[in-house]
Length: 476
View 1 (cartoon, one colour):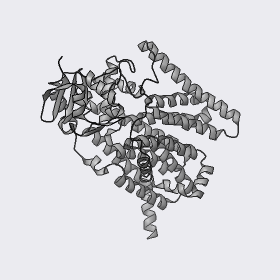
View 2 (tube, rainbow, N blue to C red):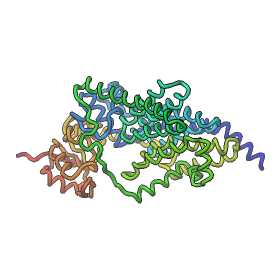
View 3 (cartoon, rainbow, N blue to C red):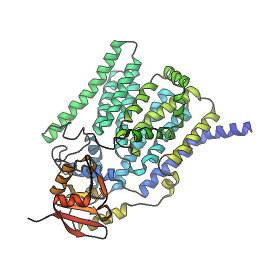
């Protein structure tokens, strides 16, 4: 019996990563063949279209996010024009994810000599990312791209010198320019500099200054290029950019922490004092990654969206690499047990079932496009519209926001009641799904019913279909 278990563990060690890769490749390929577009993707793609048409972020178009990701998507937009070629955008995002996985494999080399774990770590990142958000994720892969690049360049700078440390600072700033939470990677790098040079204040200061130089150079370059291309300054503190909205629910946030265990069951070992202390002594970077997870966890206070965890995945996985390297590098049976238990929990408690991602033929994109064509017969492209239903219509119908300079494509839960009424009053048209007309809807400062808001804004019904109501301003 013991020999059978050992043979099984040896075969697992030899072939599991290949089998796991084939499953993951099937998941991603299936998503490209049968695509489903999420609301967040449509938001970013429509903003990208507006920028391609000449809109200046924070001047012609209010955006609640830093602008880098839109420029990264711009080449695909210029390639496809106005065609709804979502599969190409999705393929580009998947490519970014596979690059992230490759970088994680490189980073894992720094913390483990175990080949199985070094190959398993990036595959786990790809698997869990998909399990958490399917094909609906968009922004987090780009944040991880720049943050992981910054981390890899820092780790390599120990041997190659200061140029990579400067470039690490540049890349860390790009993570921030992708989304404000990307600043967590900058904190990680400063913590690693402090840990690696803690014996000498002079070294901490020098390394920190060189890394900061990269941050400053990237920031100044962005400001200069923005000014040179558009002739205006980019306002990092535009009204509402740093506003804090969301659920702000501490009990929900604490409950959301439990998902970490379903993502990485091995994290339970950190609650054992001896394990924690030993890991801290042997893998001195461990504490920095743990703090990074805590920093990214701040998102959970505002909302507990599944895609928020994608930012935490690299640090969770790298801590796992460290734990395996310290405690189970040669015990193949133990590795087999922990990996299978983790994947079992991942399958049943993280996102949907893997099988549905492998064999599902459901795709909503074609129906979405057909709906958009019908709506464009009523409301022409480029109209100023407030979409109070399916936000994907902004992209699919090529609509403009109601008040682009002040609110842009802001989701209504990011607006106060007065902001919301102003947006409705500014719109040429408003679209409402009939099912949503009398439902409660949450704003920053109150809960409303859409029907009441339409009356408040002085709108009149223009046309209707089986599912949608179209409103416009009352004629004076």
